[in-house]
Image 1 (cartoon, rainbow, N blue to C red):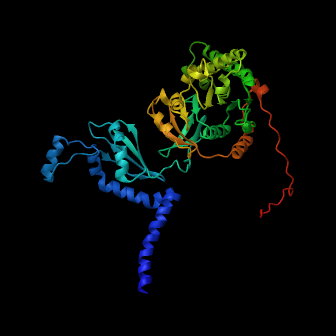
Image 2: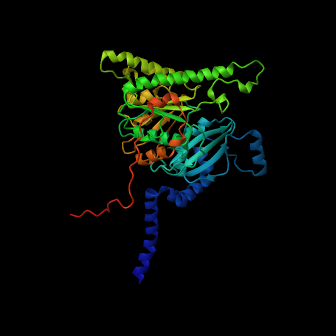
Image 3: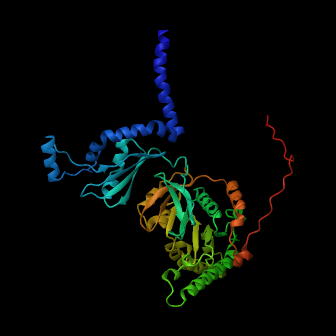
Amino acid sequence: MTDLMTLAELGGPLAVIGGADYARHAYPAVYWSTVGLPLSVARLLASYSSTMDACGLTVEPSRWRALAVRATTRREVRPVPPRRGIIRPTSTGLRMRLRLVPGQEPADVAASAERLRHAWGVHAVHVRDVKPGVVELRLVGFDVLQQVRMPRSDSRPLQVPVALREDATAFVRDYRTVPHELVLGATLSGKSMYLRNLVTGLAAQPVVLVGIDCKRGVELAPFASRLSALATDPDQAAELLPVLVKEMEDRYDLIKTRQGIAPGTAEELITSDIWGLPEDERPAPLVLFIDEVAELFMVAARKEEERRDEMVTQLIRLAQLGRAAGIYLEVCGQRFGAELGKGATMLRAQLTGRVCHRVNDEASAKMALGDIAPEAVQASCAIAPELPGLAVVGDTSGGWSRIRTPYLSLADAAATCRATAHLAPDAPALNPFRPYVPPLPDVAPGSMATARPVTE
C-alpha cells in the first residue's frame, strides 16, 4: 500500500510535466494559453525593474525626483526604467506599451530585444514605434511560423492577407501602397503557394486578373476560370503585352479627359489616377501575374532578340506608368539579375515590394533584397528546405521581416476561382486571350465505385 501511495505521489507530477512537455511541442498555442502565459507574466512583473536595469534601459532620476524620494521614504534612489503600460494577453503572446524616459529612443529598446526574450522566457520580442516617446513590445510565446494560422483580418479592395509574420500579425499584400512586387524562390521553396494565395485572395474582388505563365500554363492554368487573359508561352506573351500597354494608354486618356474640365471645378474632381474618377467611370484595377519571368528574357536565336527587347520594354512601361492606371505587376522567378539581359535591372528597380523564399545561392538573395535591406540577405539564406513557404519580405523603406504562407491545396484554389468566376470584370480588349475552361464532368449519382481496402 505504501508503495502504491509513493508511486501515485511521484507519478502524478511526472504525468503533468510529461503532458505539458508534449503539449509544448504538439500544441504550442494550448501550452502557451495554459502554462506559458502565466509564467511569462509572473517573470515580467517580478523582474521588470531589474531586467530594464541590466539591459541598460534605465536612467538616473531627475534632481527633484531624487530629493522627493529621499525626503519621503529615505531609501536609496534607484535608476528609473520606462513606465510600463497594461499587459494585454493574446492567443500568441503579450502586448505591452512602454513610455520611454527622457534621453531614450526606440532603437535602444530594439537593441535589447534578445535580452528581454531570455529574461521573460518567450520566443521573441518585437518592438514597434507607436508615437514619440511610446513604443509597443509584442512578446511572442512560441514559433508561430511552424504551424501557420492566419489571424482574422478585414477584407478591403486590393488588400490580401497572404502570409503570417513572425510577430503573429498578418502580412497584407496592399497593391495601393506597394503597386509592384518581385517574388523570388528556388524550386519547392513555396513561391507557387504564395502566388496561389494571392490569386485566390484577389478572385473574390472585382479585379481583372491576367497571367503570363511560360511553363505551358502549369501554374496558372488551374485558375483559368477566373483569369481574363492567359499567355502560356513567349509568343502569346508578345501578343498580350501590347494589348495591356494599349489598355494603360486608354486609361490615361480617360484621366486626361477628367483633367481637362472647365476652370472653377472643385479640386476633388481633379485627379491624376483612376481612383479619383467617379465610380461609374472608373475602370476595374488589373493585376498581371508573371510566373518564371526569366523565360521572357531568354532567347535561343538572334532573331528572337528583337521580340525579347519589345517585351522587356513593354514590361518596363507597365511598371513605370501602370500604377496611376490601376495596373499592378506580380513578377515571380528563381533568379532575376543583370545576366538575364538588357532591361532586367531597370525592371527590377521598379518593383517596390520584395519577397525572397529559399534560394540556392547568396547572389540570388542579393538580387531580391541586397539593394533595399542588406541585413535581410543572410536571413533569407538561412531558410531551411524543411520549411516551404517561409520567406523574407522587405520594401524600399529598409524594413524587413520573416513570413510564411499558409498551405492551400491546388484543388481548393481552383474551386475558389470557379466559384468567383462571375466576379471577373468585363475587359473586351482581353477577350481574344481569355483561356479555355473545360466544363466539369457530370458524375451521375451512384456511379462512383465503392472503395475497397487493399490486401496482400
